Length: 103
Image: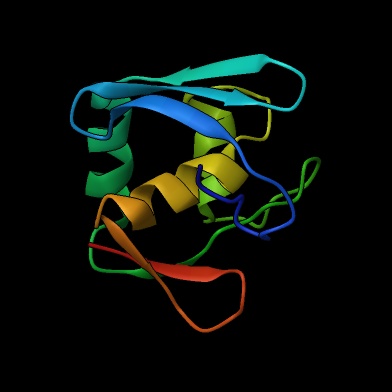
């Protein structure tokens, strides 16, 4: 089971970045990210070092969190999406900070 970006809890997901994911977190909450949305996210951030932006209410401008809230759901899901990107080899964490590079 992967850990959230901050590493404080675990979550589950099915599918993949290539096919789309269903993310299960908390007390059975679910969020879906389509393959098309992952393509859009990767296209937008490819090759850049970007803030992850895990704030639930005010993710930094230009962050993955802001992009997901604008393009996928207002619910903060970047704490799950960023680790999925790392696990599947589409991103790399930069140090211990709230930063990653999208491949």
